[in-house]
Image (cartoon, rainbow, N blue to C red; front, side):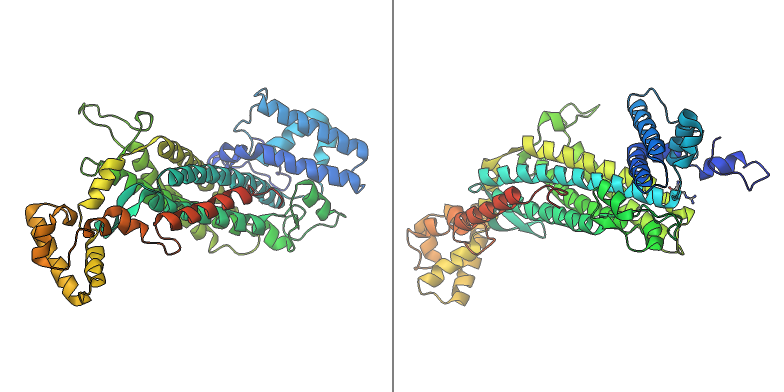
Length: 466
Ligand code: ARG
């Protein structure tokens, strides 16, 4: 084992204690961020005259070499180090001798790990944003293609009123748009640099924190060094945003699963995104959607775990915080793969327009519009409601839709019915007369699509122009 401390100890660390304490097996993921942070720190130490320019230059060169060697796999991050910070420093000392021992001047692993995590999360926020953008783009294409694709809308999973697929997809567009906004909000709050907070009380060296913050593209340094080392709010906010993304993906997955069922057959999932059964040859299962729905649990779990871990920690740094990593890493990887796969599944899915339209026409989704038609012909609404109620009952017995009943039969329910009723209660008329802002009617939908399109064009990726 190789560790950065030991001077005040006389006994050896117990092997199991060492293993329990060590984090290198997972925080090695942060090697890039750790080296990037050390580069900024050393450049600043040189600039401030805390190290000589020559010493700083030597360390910077060696850090670059270590990074290159890790990337090329010439150098392995092995388990003999306590954490990624120990690994980098030990390797530096191995390469430079005494000069390497100056890297950690005016720094603590507490501000170091706080910085590494922020750098890492900042990058992951950008990547998640990129995946959300791609999904929004796919949704928008679907919306543009399906303004006239009529389908039943549901409440209580019962057919309610006709709508369009564009309208249905548009609801998800709004959800994922808000998800992007959440990421952008938390990015703006977290983009401050904790480096220079030291163990928790800053340091006596004349560090230029504004300079390191600038080198690392933060808005500026954090303003309280105690908070700087012990704040994990940004992780909780990110996990909460990720949990919300998963909730949206899971609802959408549930719908895809229902739409893909033998009873509905609204969609056909592309072969590339479905799987078969080892025993039942006819099966084509929506496993991707099911897995996305299922993986939602572990992302919620990560959020709950970190909230719970943080709740009892006194200021400032405590080792509990090391527990912020594994579940966060897992949640991030989970969400990123779910977003990518879901987008692929959606981009290749076939919507069966004929089935959707037929289904919309078969649930008496136009009953309200039929009553309104009679009202337009002078029948008082309460009477019209009764007429249509009896008509629906008759249609149910005959297993037909209202507009499948011939006019002479309709007239037996009310003399007010005329030949124009069929057009008035057609699915197209029912949908396209709904023209309030946000409604599925063609004109309303087209202007919503224009606005969503403008949003996508005008909202830059997170971190650009920030
Ligand atoms: N591995 C530690 C973590 O992830 C790094 C910070 C260690 N600091 C300390 N004082 N032991 O939190």
